[in-house]
Length: 543
Image 1 (tube, rainbow, N blue to C red):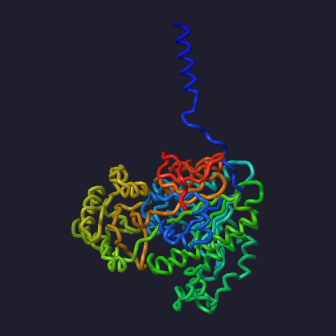
Image 2 (cartoon, rainbow, N blue to C red; image 1 turned 90 degrees about the vertical axis):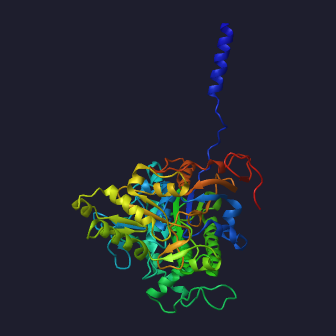
Image 3 (cartoon, rainbow, N blue to C red; image 1 turned 60 degrees about the horizontal axis):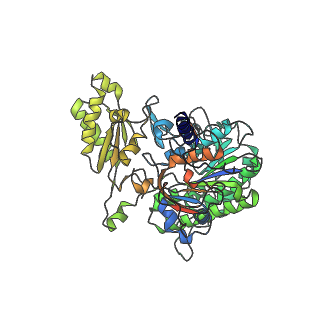
């Protein structure tokens, strides 16, 4: 009896000691992590024109791990939030980046996501206020790389937009640089340096931006240009370049200068370079996603990214570069185009259609006064001082106002501050996007969500909604440790940061909430894969 009991205990102990699933070998460390954001690049753009891609997108689709059902998990779907989410892995509830701008109750004015009154922008007259990542409340993969100890990595961000350069790289970056519309130079902030570094001044002195004078952006065989480029130097010329692939070429040239100056990927330590291309966004807002110009700029973006890959291949070797491609948001069709398709959608003025009627309703209900002291996006900010003076219950005012808002044209749902603070929202994806994006200190009193395809603003087309056309984005990994193929499991942008942290063997950023995309990790002898979901066995790759 004793022998049987001892044998049972031995067997139980042995079973408990065995891992429940096989482990993996350590992944190879890249010399450089390159994150590429393409502003306003819906996932379907990656697939719709793939036969016309022969550069960077083609390489990513044929050699990378493509997550076909990747979405933004926040609302609204705008540039600052997308760029903040990609390398923090955080939602706005924690990151504090609730929009491109928001109403600051203490200042009594709207502030942008990177506005910093303590700093100045370097270049073009050292403008004030400057820009910095101080409004970002969490850290990034780059910050964690810096804090890991040992050899110090270089972390650099580059974009046409200040927020596109600053947000992904975080607080301890070696530099963030963006394009100046007045001069075509790349500029930065006193947050990073007391003055522009000598290598940046030397790059700007080359005046690469001046070589496109009068060179209209057009497609082969097309008589009318998509963008007419002035033939005279000046702010109008430099601003026009944002609506051409030439701005993307300038980005790549500056990225090459940064890699050469810092010797990124060539110092025996993993460095991080974040590059955000914005020409798609400029043209997409102006022309709408169904325009031929959007197809053409996507093809040109593929070409330019391919040139960057070719240069890195000759400098570092692409086998040593871990690439992540994503986008900050998608875009909805122009309502006029949808009308031709007999599809729903309207264009409206949010101030006239929503905020003004809500202000009048509050006056009619509670008496005269400025009841809405500020607005941002789809959110009104109520005048708390006035509510207190009239001895009203703020929660009751919000609940009553939400009922009025639901009766306004095109409104799908309304969430109050009180609901969101309690987490009292449905479990559907739309509601969860709103809940994960509510920051108690910075968000407004209502979140007013429109029905699909309703847009506000002066652009022909825009983004910001919680619907698929705005949330469905590319996520593609390529490089050492990555098993190529198509992966169809549902993933979020916030999965990128913890995945990179695991691959680099550093701590995940403080606010990261995503999961590790370990299904794409390469193992010895493993070939390409297509998976319908994480738990499905490997099958053959797509052509």
